Image (cartoon, rainbow, N blue to C red; front, top):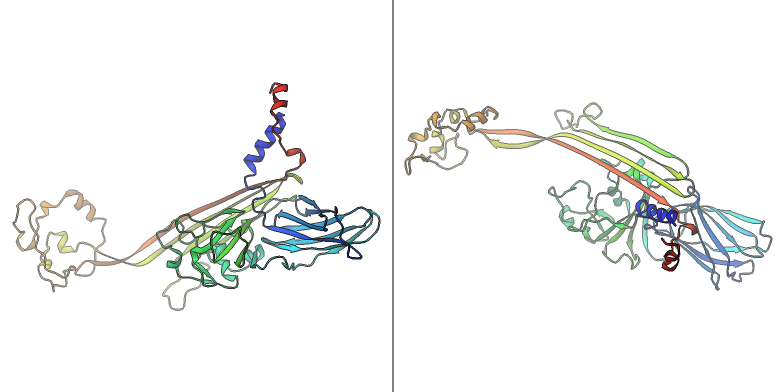
Length: 426
C-alpha cells in the first residue's frame, strides 16, 4: 500500500501535464476481405520512440477510435480471432491530426501478418477544419529573427501581420517583443486562442498569447483557422496548439548559439558605421529515459543577451552662463539662448515678490547638492543648452523548460477502499 501511495504521489508531482495535450486521434473501421465488419478486434497504437501503448476494441459495427495520442510516429496493429494480423508502420501523427485508417483483415493464422508502410501525408476526412502544422524542422532551419516561434504563425494561409494596436500591446507590456500581432481571415489579433501542451497560454488582460518556448523546445504547433471544434469556444478567429518536446527511449540533446555583432554584421549601405547591436542567444536541450518505456524527462535552457544603444534622444542642460548664475537670456522670448520661447523673470524665494536683478542668481545661493550634480552633466555647444544623446539598451533573459512524462499502466491505478484500509489498520 505504501508503494502505491508513493507512486501516485510521484505521478502528481512530475506529470502535471500527462496527456493534457491529447490533440491527435485515429479512427476507422475493421472489415474482412468481403467487406463484412469485424467486431471485437483489438487495435493497438505503439509510439515508436517511447514504446507507449494505447489500445481499444472495435465495436459491434466494426468502428474504433483511439484518442489522446501525442504527436509522434506510431505502429498500428489489428488482431482478431481467425484473421492474420494487420500492421501499419511509420504512421505519422502531427498536432491536431484526426485521421481515418481502415483495416481490411485476411483470413489466416494469428502468427501471420500483413504489413503496410504508411505514407507521409495523412488526410483528415473526419472534420472540416482548415488547419496547418508548423513542425520543428521549419522552426530550426528557417531564418527566425529573435528566435520567436510565434512569428511562424504568419506562414499559415489566411494569417497576416496586424497593427500592434489591434492586439492591445505596446512598449509598456511585460513582453512586448514576444507577441506577434496577427490577423486571421480578417479577425482581431486578440481573438486567437493559444494552448501550450493543452493548457491555455494567453495573457488574461489583453487576451493575446504569452511568450512561447524557444524553438529548440517546441516540437510543433497546429494553427486552426476555420471550422474548428466546439471545444475551442473561447475565441472566434483561430486556435494555436503548441506542443513541447518530450524525452524518448534514447538520449538526445543539442547546444546552440546565435550571434549578431559588429564583427559579423555588414554595414548598411545608408549607414555611416556598422550597427553596434550585440545580440547573443545560446543554450541547449537534453532529454531521454528515466525508466525505459515508462518514465521520460526533457530539459531546456536559452539565454538572451542584448547590448545596444538607442540614439535620437534630446534634452536641455545648463549652459556655461547658467552655471555661473547668469539667466539673463530668459528675459527675451526671441533670444537664441532661451529654450522656452517666452520671457521669464526669476523671483527670489527668500524675498517674496522681489526679482533677481537681470535674472542673475548669486552662486552662493546655489544648493550644494545641485552644484555637485553639475559635474555629471555634459556641456552643450548650443546657446540654449540643447544636447543629443544615445541611451544604452541592456537586456538579459533566461528561459528554462522542464518536462516529465509517465506512462500509466494497470498497476498504477489506485482505488480507495476504506473497508480494506480499516481491516489492515492503515
